[in-house]
Length: 424
Ligand SMILES: [Zn+2]
Image 1 (cartoon, rainbow, N blue to C red):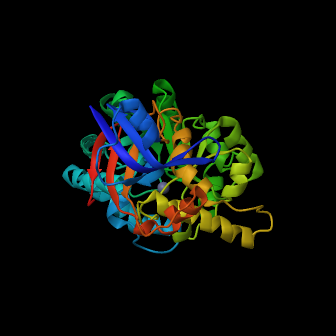
Image 2 (image 1 turned 60 degrees about the vertical axis):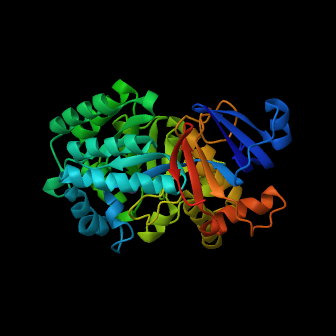
Image 3 (image 1 turned 90 degrees about the vertical axis):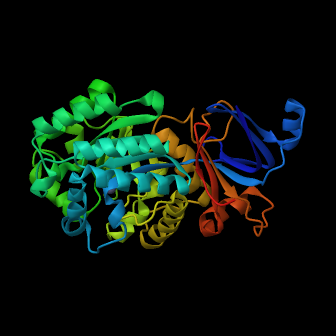
C-alpha cells in the first residue's frame, strides 16, 4: 500500500547540512520511502498529480537518546541538585512501579506523548522491576514506537525497594532480553546500569558481559554533577576518573550512550572518542538540576558522537524541538561565560542532532533520521503554519525551534505505519 504525502519536506543531508522541497511529495510504500521530490517530478514518475489533501510540513521523526519512563509522572517536580532530588522525588516515584498495572498505564501515556511530539525513536530507562519492564515493553509494542529500553538496575546506595543482588538482576535481565530483544520488530533491549554510584563492581561486570553476549546497547549516566563525581572517586579509588570506571568494566563501546557528560576532563573525552561511545546531551535537565552546561560546540569540534535527550523527569517536557532550542541557547550562554568555549551551535546543527545525528548515534543513519528513498518511513507531519512567510531554508530552520509552539503535529509514521494522528 502506498501513502502519498504532499507539502514542504525538510530533511537533513550529510554533515549538518539540510535540504528541502517547497512543493514536495513523499511516497511511502510499505515500511519504506519510495520517492521524495518536487510535485512535478512525482507527476512525471507516477503519471498523475499528487492527490488533493492538506499540505504538511514534514520532517524525519525525532530521535530521543535519553529519557526515563518511570519518572514521567513526576516530570518537572522537585528542586535542588541531582543527588538530593533523586532521594526525595525520584526514588519514591520509581518504587511505585512495583505495581505492574500502574507501570502499563504510565507507559501507555508516555509513549503516546513521545509520538504526539514527533519522536519516533527513543532510548529509554525503564522501570527498576522485571514485571513493570514487561508491561512497559508491551505498551511500547502497542504504541509502535521504535525503542531501545532496559530495566534500570541498582544494587547499592539506593533505597532497599529499588535494589537487588547482582545475581538476581542478571537473571531478570536475561529473561527480559530473551522476551523483548526483537530488532526485526524495532524493539531492542538496552542494558541499563543506573550510574556508577548505585552499581557495585560485580553488577557492572555482569552488565558488560550481557551487553557483549547479545551485542546490546548500554545506557547509563556520566559526569552530570560535581558531588556525583566526587562520590564516584570515593567508591572507585583505583580508577583515574568517572569515565575510567565504565572503561575498566568494559562498558564503553560504540553501542554505549552516556547521558549528560557535562564535566569531562580532556583524558575522559579522549577515551570516549576512542571507544566511539555516544554522548546524550540533555540541556533542559542540566539546567533544571543546576548541573552545568555541556560544552556541545567543543565536543562536536572534537568529533565526539553526540545526540539529544529530553531526560524526563529533570527534563520537564518531551519535545525534541524544545530540547534542540535549549541546546542552541545554552551554547550561547556558555560562549558568553567561558572564554575557552569557541563558538556556538546554530539551529541547523541542533536540528540535525535531533534527527540524523540521533540516528547516527544508534548506528541507524542509513535507515532512519532523514526523508530519503529507501529509508524506513519515520516521518512527522505538522499542519502547515500559513502565518510563516518562509522564502528559504535558512529562514525556516530557526522557526522550527523558536516558534515550535505554533506547530501542530498531525500525523506521525513509524516504518510507514501511522502511529499518531492529531487535529488536522
Ligand atoms: Zn537520566
